[in-house]
Length: 230
Image (tube, rainbow, N blue to C red; front, side, top):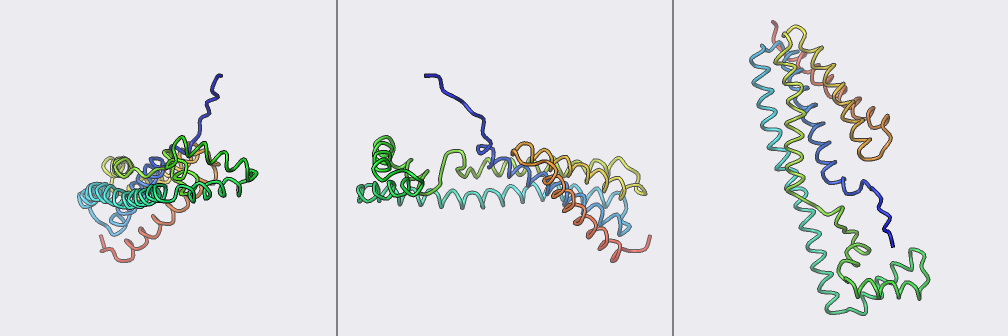
């Protein structure tokens, strides 16, 4: 019998979330910092040093934060699996009834639900309970190291873009150039993330772009308010 293979997007959830978050944060935080210093009449050297510091510190912070956060999720999953394994050893009949009740609540007849539970538990009881009782699957399992690496790399890539613009553009054009290019990059990132995740492109693009515009406007305003006279 030929197998019908389908391409789904749920296996992208872990790295896609980390990559989008990292790139978005890299573009937005670095661009906002550059705009804040520029509007406060900082010189070109100060802007570049701050941008490099933001890239380095941000990438390390994203990696550490993602690793700790996702590792906590992984620890919780391991603890739940250990508890489920123990319950299967001490109360196999009760666990069978519990699994059958889950299938019955999803629409199977009680007799068919018991048959399905019996066959799945005879194949891999822990996997059946992990998937259908705990909601843990291989595609959605927590991967701390993967999340940390994707976050750090995507933050550095996103942060490097406004920093490169600040390096190449004269100081008197810097605010306009960094703002326009960063908003364009955020729009492209939102569209790409929506397309990769199978969501509608326009809402994703607008959500990222409008949020970025607000953040940069606030930072620029604060820089101008508390900046020194040129």
